Length: 406
Ligand code: NDP
View 1 (cartoon, rainbow, N blue to C red):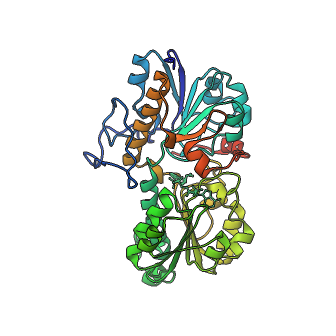
View 2: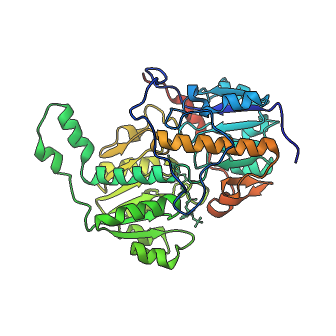
């Protein structure tokens, strides 16, 4: 295959910290991993031009790609200005060959935008979850879409466990009493329980879902899962996990439900009012998969009525969430901005993965099958396994309503 030269790469990253790009870090290094848990090898670019553990996901970090791209004669444009027709992204997209975007601050590649991007051949998701791309339009326009499979799956699994414990033990309100100068033990514990003995279920037992099951097992809970494909029997035995044919069958027995499937037409608004009404009264829902898998207003309503005891996650729709998004103010939530998959540890892996993909692309070499979502006009690789055709970007224009808060 022919080598690609003189390409234009548009990379959309979140803003630098309000205090400026860091000059030093809380820790000197990050652990070096040998492989992912299933034996998949870590990203393997020929070289990297950053120090692992540095902030790479914000504009000044540039995913550590500038030196590499410019030395090869390519043009790199990095911006956080991604929403609206006047945005830098929309302007630069017109003659871009490659777009890179992170799910935390997604550059929505709608059909409308794809139609304007006449040169676009490759859309890289620096992370996991390519639902911000209209995959149907990518299929129709023969654009390759790929993501850095496994790069932040364990980061998210750790976050899920933290959020389950935070909700059930009522951690955030208790922390807030300390900040307020109080010692209000009864206020703190009147919604605080042990998770021991609880039924905990995951919607999907892929890389994240199965890592959550593995991590929750030592808490002596009863584990459940539902998925399109069943786990190997020896893993089910090892985890002592019960398989359910349907989401409905699982949620009705669970005290805690965690959502770990991709967002695609089959899962969009899966947790609507009807589904939530089938959950146990007092159940907790943790969603670090994608905001749109849940119905925004149904979640807020279930918390207000007390049907759900708590909701946590880091994913919203759209992103950034408008300042008046009801999940910012609904009761008993433990939401964060979309951060779970962009720890400094994760950034190092998906920056390396982005570079590996670019090296392959420019050198005319095949991209790893496990990174592919759409290729050759159809779902491919990880995409063929875990997604369905179609588009879930509808409504993403609402991200324009967000106003920066310093
Ligand atoms: P995997 O591909 O390993 O797992 C996804 C699993 O979802 C697969 O087992 C798949 O089933 C299953 N699935 C797909 N559709 C359905 C469905 N309709 N019902 C039940 N199960 C379904 O991906 P990861 O575990 O690594 O990531 C999962 C998702 O988590 C990502 O797509 C992304 O949206 C989100 N994520 C969030 C991050 C964050 O920062 N908050 C970071 C990383 C990921 P099968 O393959 O068996 O068909």
